Image 1 (tube, helix red, strand yellow):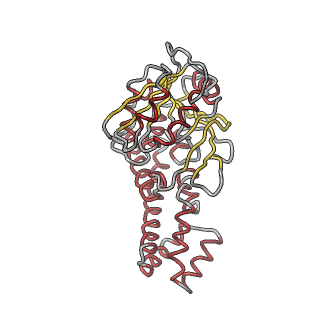
Image 2 (cartoon, rainbow, N blue to C red):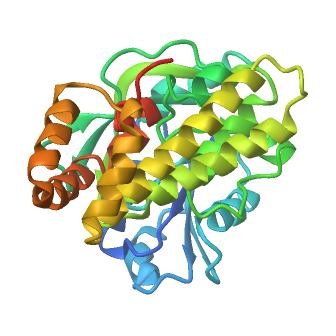
Length: 336
């Protein structure tokens, strides 16, 4: 635990929300990163929503700091956990920090002035280092991001890092995170925030560490695609029929259905139904491009037995690609 002097939390500017399901052994790293913030006017709420591990024991040494509170509830999923923690917060701004991630010391000092300076900014986000179950560390975003309007967030040309900051009042206006979603609940939240108008603002600085854990829920490509589809369908229903984003949403829905069919074909091959799976992949050949795919289809015609180990490898390689780079990049879908 950091030895930084304790500071009164009489008027916190921001509430840092830390859901900690199943990450008690990593929680100290997250909380040490909170204590290391150069901006001290924060409150931090750690929420244990029925975790199987000892979150209470992990957070106990940190409760000597009056800015840190612990909320223990029954299990309702991460959306419900965040909603409960935010409801108990008092600060006007909310920062999300998963219990296995870390903030860099300047995170709050750089992010808060950005969102406070402009009422039209719904989300202030940044870059982060991805580490953990990866061959090597990498950045979430490889280049500065385009303007973060609703369309750019929908098609993921603008990526929102999970450790982002928004207004508590906006959380209230849209009804919080959707507890019916078990995947893509954060994506859905960003999309609904931007339906209020305004934009997401990208701070071009690395201000966090995003841990990739083997077997994490967001690594399940098929479930993530289904979650994405629900987000698009919700946005289509919520927006006016003549909204400028509607044609994009229709395109994204169609692409996602095709991508799901592609993944289901891969499932068949990986599960041993090679002949049927390869036939379905061949029928969707138009979706993928590049020399690797061209070479692979030729090789599988000659030696179908190679398809199963190759596609298993592909799935491992791209288990995080969807969240990081978006639908087109993961599936190498050719632009129309």
